[in-house]
Amino acid sequence: MKKTKKYLDIAVIGLGTFGYELAVQLSEHGHDVLAIDKDMEKVNHIKNHVTEAVQADITDIDVLKKLEIDKFDEVIFGMSSALESIILSITLMKKLHVKHIIGKANTFIQKEVLLKIGANEVILPEISTAGRLAERISNPNIMEKFEIDSGQFLIEVKVPKKFDNKNLKELELRKKYGINIIMKKNNGKMEIISNPSTRLMYNDIILVVGDEKKVHDIFNE
Image (cartoon, rainbow, N blue to C red):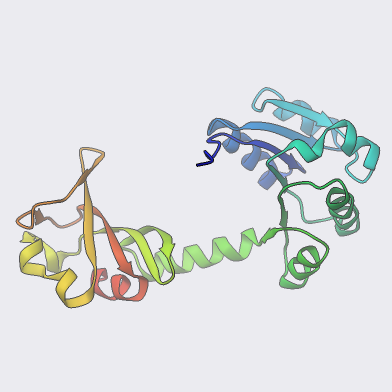
């Protein structure tokens, strides 16, 4: 069976606030990061925080070839302005058979344009951030969530007051709602819950698996 490479070779293009933070955080996660920008000042600002930083014109196919852009596991655009340059660059990258291109957009129309010309994925950071903030305010007990299957989520939640000092057997969440509590945070570490007599205390942090809407409804006060 083919093994998935843990750390990736990633190129981040455009070193504004978003691109800079993305490149630095990817590097801190252990990935090999090439940071690219036309502005030498931005390149110098980030060079000590990533694997390599270069000043380059990403609309020049010869420059892209010299950078061996096709060798990267991910190429991510950290910019959404200069749409014409982004379109040209993505078009050239598709000709060079770049594996996976992630674009950044400010509007849904811009997202559709980038997807149509060959971007594999396009993110809308401002819209995503607004959505996460609205959800956090609306569902204060929900901390993190990840989709693991169609309609099934792994969700990190805080135990509400109504579940304080109750054990899993009493709550019957699996029987009533199809929700499984699988882990509980203890002294900063997650521990697997296997004993139905395990008691939950108010504001405990637990990991549950189940339907997203049911989890939201049940774990909110």
